[in-house]
Image 1: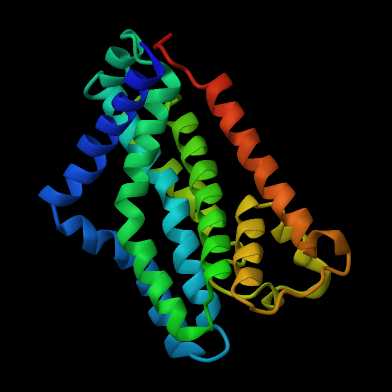
Image 2 (image 1 turned 45 degrees about the vertical axis):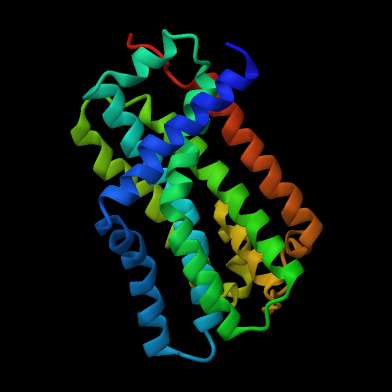
Length: 254
């Protein structure tokens, strides 16, 4: 297959699995907004002025991170229940095209939520063109990292019953525990470096910096608070997760 045929296949996978699903089942819109808006409402009630901007940033990143959970669930279901992955990988379609098509489909599901949170952010803090571009860059890197991890995990499931607990543990750990919905200052100063063990912390700090929110220097490892270092780390981690997904994923049943 030529690159044009591969690109056409990617678009078709994205359309049939992502866009068409949203059009046919509008209830997905409610499901996409529900969890991040619940967190945001809770933060607004508790501390409307101090934490709300971080909550909106958290809603953006939560939506991007949970594309990984959707990727893991959908790819595992299509492989185990529908045997669809085996059909694609034995066809002229390249594995990377299958993964990218599915990842774009998951992104299509979250575009309405991402757009809503960007609009809300504009009412909370001053937002300029460069700010929006920087936030979009962080969101895209987060999406690529999360979907790569989700696809990698999906290839190791043996039954559908394994999907829910693994997804809740992994992606809750990435999207709720790190300082995404709350400022990193809520963590004791000497322990803040621990938050950087999660790749989502780099994304949240970069997004906060782009929105003009205060990002404190990490006293133990000051370099972690540098925007260029955070960019390099997020790009490197995204590349690593993508590489691992391509190299370690189980394309065929043992």
